[in-house]
Length: 442
Image 1 (spheres, helix red, strand yellow):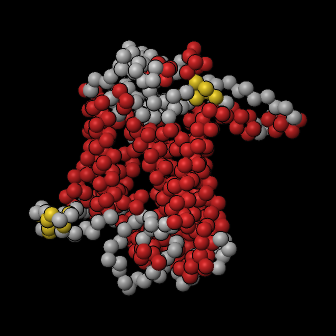
Image 2 (cartoon, one colour):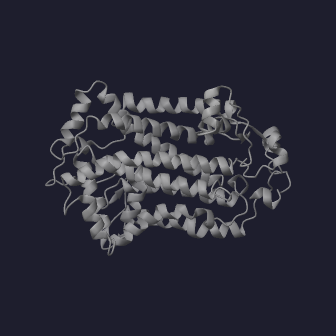
Image 3 (cartoon, one colour):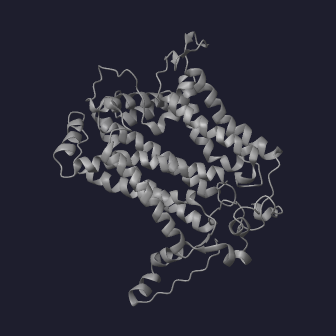
């Protein structure tokens, strides 16, 4: 698919003039006609959904920035004024706030799809790496935006996270002072966070262009996980438009319905009530927690008793994703044909949910349901810390131990010779077909 020849023919004088100087129309036309594997399922629609989420966040963010005041004395009041006095301000703010959650729902499903179907394997390593960079920038942008309302959770969240940076040896303290703009969280901090929060979405948009460029060059993966040879391109692929634009459009409509349910009927369901209390440095909230989409990484941070070790573990949980293409030793991409690895993958998803749940709990809570636990850790009776540590251990073991060893030792199921076999036979030929050649396996 990287060898796809352009079929675009300029029709007007303006198109011809533009095509010889900046062939942006040709690029769009070629992308619409890009040969796409005809067996892509609805898990492949989250790319379009994520593009929509980014556009919504940038558009609503620009409007909010027109009315927001990055000043510790005025920030909270300016957000309330947006909600009450700006025409449509409440809708714009709720769309932006819930849009962040929708963004992360889509990106987590998009990444799990790539993990399950082996979309990070050669020749698509750069697609995956740029995608991980986008994910990291999303987390940074979301954290910066969480501070801007200047509520109780905003202030104390910034206090906790910036203090973690100070734990890094040698460079931690200078970076902390630069980020805060002084020795403590204050007006300079809010100004810096606002500036970075406004800038990073456009950096993300640039990375998305790189992501699409890499995708256009390497071509789409598919649920079977085999490369499509040139002589079967006409049989195993269809143009991206109209076949997958319609499919993506239908998925986007369903996603927008879910989005609208939160915006119109429960706009504060995914937020924290303490953030409707103005920031007060003299009153510490009973439980300082980030937004729900950061809870798994927050749990990993708390699982390590050493402060610097916790910071390393938290950033390592994201960093390990960047080297994933070289950790998986299997020659088979799709977990459809890897039953052993598929079992470990299901456990991995459950562990991610457990980490999110543990991250939302009070660290010293002594009861799970109606059952008291009798696990003594660090001299304290703690019913969540042990579970968090076990889940953290499995998270890293999945990438660093399980994935390399299972890839070497498991015997995968036979793989179809072409993607047409499972498509045309309704899936019956998937396990009966002879294994594909190594170059088709990738």
